[in-house]
Length: 284
Length: 342
Image (cartoon, rainbow over all chains, first blue to last red; front, top):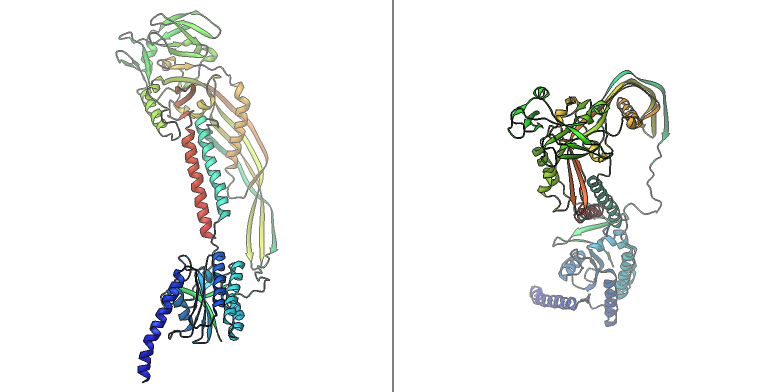
């Protein structure tokens, strides 16, 4: 009986999931809707409020945000569900799919944040912990909308703060480090390049002009060829010798900021499709 | 003062010096004579007619026409019959050169070299040089002063040799001070100066040096078929300049022997002249004056080595385009490298 039930229910679930996916796709197709409340935990007003916040953040940051709730993870772990949802719904902007997804998984009783692309640089493990700490309290009290809003606001605050200078990706599978390199236009290099370029160009200009106009001395006497020296005396006499010494100052590189050595770390993992995500969660 | 022409004993035509064979050739019957033969020949003279302050008039020994020559010109051609004329009187006494380097590059070779030199210049206007103009190329013996000097010199000073090493957290610096002394005899050959006021000095000094070991004792025969100028600047005019130059070269030769030490600091330098021999020499130069859009450009080629020096017009559009390209390329490259390294 239980088998029959399972076989009957499964197609329903499948259709429901499909409908949900289609619905979500429709949301995405509309261009801006990024809330998918499969678990039905948000009121209409709450959904709208979250949606508005997301829209605002999208415009401000150029990255994507989504809030998803589910009460059936379809047998997947919370992390896998979040990553797959992120990928299947084409969340993220640009080629690197910059963005984040906040999942409230009532199936496993867990909240989870999945990040990808540039967002992984902003939300380091340490920051992610703080965001989750903050959201956890509200989620525990079933104040899910508030927890989602807190995640969005905290994330936005960290984006404004910028990527920590010591940020690096640490792959949980390979242990490979990928330090952050500041992207952005190298104005200083360009300025230096312009100076060097101007120096080279002016050098060539004046050199050619002077050669063509014969404005410089044209003849240098070849001393080594036409001069001859017969030395009658050659002496190198040591008249003084002394040694001085100094202590080399120790390189004390410990920073006074009180930040832990791993503060810039973002632990990354690969999703089933092979894309790289960052993220972390909390059991409720 | 008389004008002379070397006549061919076979046909009576005028003979010129041939740089390729280094002999004397008749332009008409192509007979060839060596220098000894030439000296045995009777010269064809004519007398000066009327002296002038700036120019002097002579009668061409060949056609009898009157030829005007500037005061410093000692050999040229008759304007009418193109006969080579040498004013031997201008090359006697104190104006008699002690040495002469005969032309070794013929007119045809000089033309080829000029054309290939011009074609290697990238920043001249495209229509600048026409091959017809090169026909005006003329071979001129220019007067130079050259000086061979022997000097006794002494140079004293110190060097500081610094060695740095580290052991754990201490850096040691060892300084060794050496007293350096060098003395010896310095010989400088062929310190040269152009000795004609009206000449384009930069151009004529730009084609130096000549190999004076290949110079021959002066003989008027070498001038036949070429133009020649005589000096109007005496060696005293250059003595101070040559003295200063000598000091620079002597110092540099002595300093170059200080090796294996740190930076040398000179304390005392002393130099005294042992011997100075000045030579008044005539040196072979192919000269071309080129007029374009009212502007004159001068070219000179060393008639012995082929070294070229000259003024050229600049195609500023082309030059600015290349410089702009270099500016853009360097800027882009450094920006890109900077971007990758950040």
